[in-house]
Length: 371
Image 1 (tube, rainbow, N blue to C red):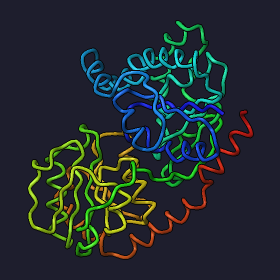
Image 2 (image 1 turned 60 degrees about the vertical axis):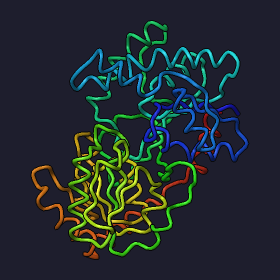
Image 3 (image 1 turned 90 degrees about the vertical axis):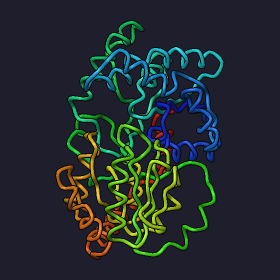
Image 4 (image 1 turned 45 degrees about the vertical axis):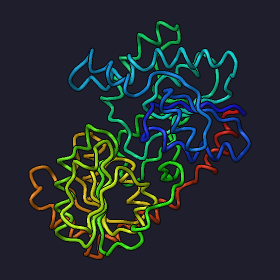
């Protein structure tokens, strides 16, 4: 079977789908990932076959910033800017390699339109985050309407014939009720090709904290990382910081037990730490959950981050720290790292996630239903 996977050219958009794509490859299917040309290099490094389609992330962000401002900037980037070029490239690809099935991540909207035009099934794969609020979905649908009308494709749809809900159930919201064809899938952390972790990682003193605000510059700023790093270094023996889009030289460690790296795979870090400090991004939140780690969350604007922070607090698996509570950040990190109740609650959530159907099981069911 030919399976086309479509994704916005960014790590957090691709990575949730990789376990399903790998399951299809192991089944013997011909899988291609359509995304921006430059990001295709990362796709290939992850062991998948990349097909250039659409713009690269830098181009999309530049075009959006040049034409739009305010809260609708990102909505236009994912719809009116990204979709027409991506769609043209997908249709052109179909003239030489026609997919039997399209799987798109939930913010890549050319996939459902291409599937409609080609008459093939389409599956939506969510992030490990709560479903988009109804108002945001309606905005995106309105922006897509002229594009669908131009292609004589009828009313726009945001999702395919099935919606694979990879959000950990305790974090999901009522927004999921507005989506048809929802199927649960176990979220499996993926953070890129396997690499050898640095030797010092296994020798750090415990308790240890991992600080990360992700890879998106909007949410990961050097001053925020410095503040969190300094707070953690006051109350735990070791601190590991990944600074993402920031240069490591912008951060000043307070001691030799503070380690700053541009990037480390979370899978290699999380087994060596006792608490996670983050902005509540989907990938970092999932990593903490799957490792049964307490989590201190300082959300930086996105709705999903705010929801994750509130749920972490409500479930007793960590602490939500708001911008006006930052003086209490050292105490929050110390409590999460040392009070057993947080780790016990986090382990319960981890065990519940393991009961969800695996990507392999879900893929088999889908292919039986839609092919």
